[in-house]
Image (cartoon, each protein chain N blue to C red):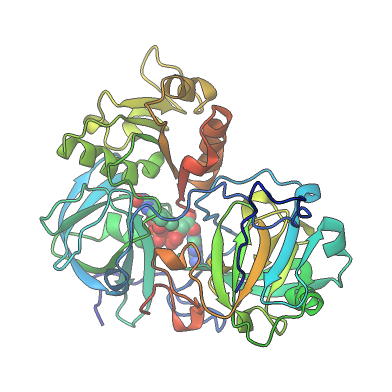
Length: 201
Length: 267
Ligand SMILES: Cc1cc2nc3c(=O)[nH]c(=O)nc-3n(C[C@H](O)[C@H](O)[C@H](O)COP(=O)(O)OP(=O)(O)OC[C@H]3O[C@@H](n4cnc5c(N)ncnc54)[C@H](O)[C@@H]3O)c2cc1C
């Protein structure tokens, strides 16, 4: 351990939900996107799943809202080291979309891409089984544009760069294809509990 | 895997329009420079060698970092402080210094009210103290000095941009480079003594006699966009989120292509 002289840090709150190296951002919700926030109206939003699936499909806003609603309430964790507790998102479980397109058994990974061109890669197992959402509501209101509205991917158990804002689609693959940050030195999976921040962690 | 079939001009009938696929990329991808995965994953001990006051709220901290692999202007690093009980705090900081091979890097930190890490730096740190760093990180907001650059920053957002300006000077680059920087007042303008003819300043709270006070506006951006260099600008916007939103919208409205704006938000 490399102790910093005179550094005590804030009084520790023993928060069982706080992964190592993270701090509680409280009411703050920092915005960390490298792109210009797009003006994307719900009417222009579409979401597509294709690649290794039986039936590729594109949903528009209304079609996506016709799927059964599903909410997430819990924590989110950003690789820049803040975590946020008790957040409430509303949308649809990704499972509901995947049930429609029927993934091939050989699909192992997904590339999520945004309407801006941002991409992020994830193991398929991380976005199935009730662990991922397409979210369009935050705290009972429409998701603000700077946080990815009208709709974003939400994968709360991984660092938040995986939760692509302005989500446009998922492509299922039988291999891992690094997305934007993954190609910029970040970890392929990004599990906050294992501090998988950068590749090599 | 999908195979793309090429449609030639001689195809007798037009195939049905494909369903909407990946939207056109309106975002500058991929990163400008490759990042060494190995360098990014190693924590190194950095020794504080000097502190330079910049403004009442900001100071520059110079570190010797044995084994530092070098950086490209615009990149940042992760810094970690460790308390005696093992508690750690880590934050990202942009690198302020131009790349050189002296094994030193400089960071410029704002003193954030109640801030855990910046608070330690501004009230406890003294030369000889050791902290840990890893990086450099993210090749996205990096400017190797290869294209005309329009730099727009506010507050401590000027830090990575200053690395670019210093690099431009140190290398004697002839490429056009302009800096548009916003500060609350002349006293709070970081690197004031170093800014030169490439810089336009905007003051939001108080300004010298005869200089307007106000937010960065279309009128500040217009002259820079009116005479773009051949091939246009590569724009780099850095600051708080609200500044980044405001400035990037001004640039888009003035005609800067969205896919040639890179943004670093300090949160
Ligand atoms: C890519 C990147 C580059 C950056 N580069 C720079 C740079 O060059 N220079 C720079 O100055 N900054 C930079 N930043 C911002 C920097 O990372 C820190 O966010 C900043 O220094 C504040 O950290 P802190 O530990 O001092 O404050 P924090 O402790 O994080 O506090 C921030 C605010 O939240 C409040 N707060 C948070 N938690 C608590 C709590 N538990 N109790 C009470 N109050 C709390 C504090 O009062 C304060 O107002 C950069 C950020 C990013 C993402």
